[in-house]
Image (cartoon, rainbow, N blue to C red; front, top):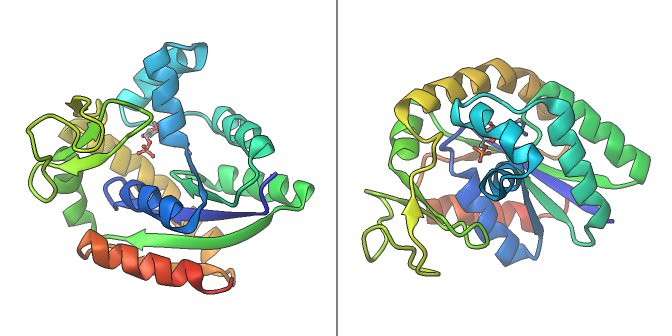
Length: 219
Ligand code: AMP
């Protein structure tokens, strides 16, 4: 069982997924992205995937009990410190996670809000392209981070895809969900001693630098 869990909070397009992937390598953390777990289930066509597919494509949230169950099952097997990306996303998830961690004696580390103004987010999401190989999952952007060969992942050579929920329409639905759930989540965490806000409206390398510095502080 892991010793500590850290949380990256942020809107769709805030860059938390990109940053999480770099941070886990830099700091030897285990990456726990509920979006990646769910997309994997969708691509494998499991029972969970079949249930989640339409919900995800429409930009809505998968129900709390399902997501909490996935996370708690994963945490049972973790030995490293964990970095959550995309979880918790609702107050109910945050409370359930808090109860689970206390019951297992696992500490809550940093809760970092990667803050990006709403007007920047849509262009980031609609231009995003993602490696179709789930084991790689590298993230590109048509303008700000194009792959060397169009449509092909620089890292593993797999085709890039445009996520079904990265269209303008699905983005607006995801932002609707985000706006409805984020303020209570922020209120839940922002009073805590390990809450930090990071300015996410900068070059990804600068955001990464701030995050590494922060995670190297002792919580
Ligand atoms: P993400 O990759 O984090 O943007 O997540 C993609 C989609 O997966 C979301 O729009 C939701 O449909 C679903 N999802 C991911 N994480 C959660 C969560 N913690 N709670 C509910 N749904 C989630």
